[in-house]
Image (cartoon, rainbow, N blue to C red; front, side, top):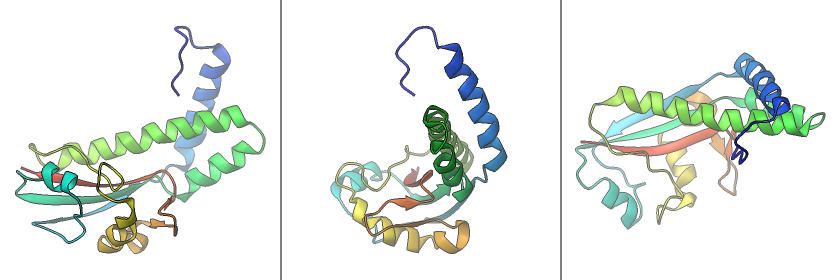
Length: 161
């Protein structure tokens, strides 16, 4: 939440705890993945440099599920601060979920690299999701403007060393 004060306001702590309880009730983290040697959706020099020492490539799509989006949107109608707390907690939750997946794939690997990083174009997102069949597998798709739905989702490439 980028809270700058050294002492967190008690009301914010209460809202974070309340938001955590609400979020845990609707979280349905899911992922799909594929491992292969190379794929045509690796466009740009940055992704190629990132993967240059990799023997295989781990393609990942992960989501917390549509109910998280619904909770954030519904809460925003009555309590914007609580909604912001839930949104921040969900950001942390999807990153932690991806970290968990990453920690279980192989001992030696690169960090995650997602469409939109460096010169790896965000416009690749539909092909990336299609390659993983993510809509059918985990209900993850993207809009014409490349925004993933559900929003608390991540796609990434990880090089396996």
